[in-house]
Every structure is written in structure tokens, then in C-alpha cells.
Length: 361
Ligand SMILES: [Zn+2]
Image 1 (cartoon, rainbow, N blue to C red):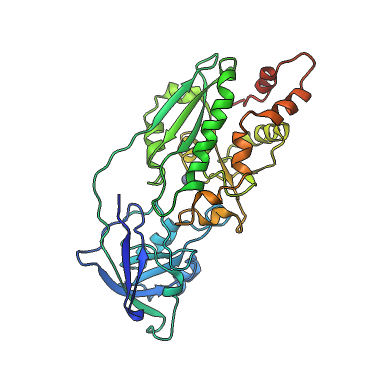
Image 2: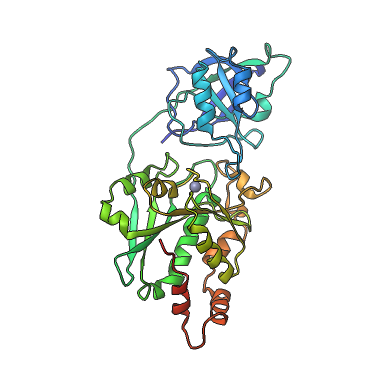
């Protein structure tokens, strides 16, 4: 709901592309001009060291890989800038000359620039340079969450979700066309089996995930207690292409890990589990409501994975390599069928063996 904007760097007498952060607030009419203080990555230590520099100026930090332990979310950097009295906030993207998008920041003035152009120089006064940001217009728009139920034998269900929205810089191919394609392919493979399962499958196509997980938050908040009880698990597919290495973020539910590792082993899929709750996709809203929830994501803890291009104009279809997504959406489950069959007690069916993988809440 915001247009791409320009960022003028007066010290270099040049303009550069920039992109407002989602939920940003507009700069005053005509833009905002202030000096920029370069805080590098934007760690708490860097903010502390520049505590006396920031009042009335614009804080500049770096975008960093989100799928890694120890990542510092842009929201924390923004709040540190606000606390120090900054009047604007810029994030430099990982690709020279190209902006990066982002969300979950509110009340921000300006966003996103070019790392090279924004680098400190002797021309700047004590490492600061003037910059002018342009307004970020808002207008009303609406979207919806789509649900589709495949009933099982009881009223219980597994919610399998993927968000349908993305940022406008590239194609949002990894984040999250890869999750959406995987959800559809896995559904096609499972659909004939679900009626024999104890639990049904509810497909949830959430929107405005990129806007602070709003679609799934509204969905979970709108559930009556009895409905929440009927959801045994949320499996959220978000950015599952871009690396062959798949990780499950198990949201602090230790009971999920043995279940996931058993399924992965029986299916022949290498899987890493990461226990701390990470509020970086729709599964977090289920987890915060006490519903066991996990996110599958590719390339976790791998700075070289294509996932480093998520939120940039380089999130394009050529980055979605076979691997993580392929493991989820294998079209006919062929090799997994054979593996499961091999491990089957004599005379038992595939459906029986799939049922043995049932998650016990
Ligand atoms: Zn996503």
C-alpha cells in the first residue's frame, strides 16, 4: 500500500532508490532532511556508543539475514533509534544500489537505501551526511484469508498454512511462492488419504503476513476456545525454497521435535529442528495462543543460501532451487511411499503407516 520512493543524499549530490518499510509513517510534506549517523549493523553496543549523536538525526543500520540464530530484528533497531531521539530510520540492503523491503515496524519515518552510497566518507561531517526522505502515502485496501477443509474421521484438524502476500521489489518467489506451491502440491498428494486420517487438514492461505502477521492474528483471535482445541497442530510453510536444507522452527514446543524427526527419518528428508519461538511468520500466532505450531523454512543458519535475497528485488524464481520445497511437494510421494512401505509391518497399508506418524498433542 506504499509506493516506491526516492532517497536524496545531499552529501553525494545523488538520488537513490529506496522503499518505505511496511507500516511506516509518512515524512512531513516535502520530505525530511537530516544528517545520517551510520551505526553499522545496528547492535545495542553501536547504538550505545552513538547515544549522543542521534537526537534529531537519521539512524542508518544494515539489513541482516533473518533465518539465523542471533539475528537482530529491524524492530529492535528501530526502537533503539526512537529511544535515542532519531527523527528517521534507514536500513541499507545487501545488494548495492537496490532497496530492501521489510515490515513489522511502526511509526518509522524513512526506510532503506544503498549501502555503498550511504557509506561514510571524508566528505561527510564527522561520519554523518544529510539525507532527505520522501513521503510514504497510505490508502485503504482489503484482502482476505482463504480456508479450505479436507475432513478426517474426527473434528480435529491440522492447519497447514502459507502466506499469499509478498513485497513488491521482486517476485517474492522464495517468500512465499515456494511455500504456496508446496502447500498446493502436498495437498494434492494427501487429499485422497485424509478421509481415513483421525484428523482432517485445514488449508489456510493467509494474507497480510508481511504486515506484522495480521491475517493469521485475526484468524486465531477469532477462534472460539472449542475451535482452538480442535486444532492439533499448525504447520506453516514460509520460504521453503532457496536451499536444499530444511529446518523446522518448533516454537518452544519440545514435544514437536521427536515427532518431526521421526517423520523426517521415515521420509528420508534431512531436517534440522530449532526450538526457540521465532515470531517471523504466521505460526507464531498459533504458538502464542497455545496451539502447537511450527514453521518449515529453508536455508536456516546458512548465510550463503539464496534466502539472503528475501525482501530484496532479487527474490526471483531462479533462486528457488530444488531441495527444501521439493522435499515437501514431491509430486507423487513416490520414494516416500516406498520407504514407508518397506518399514510397514507385514500386511499393513500405506495409510496405516501414515497414521503411525500421527502427532500426539
Ligand atoms: Zn514469508
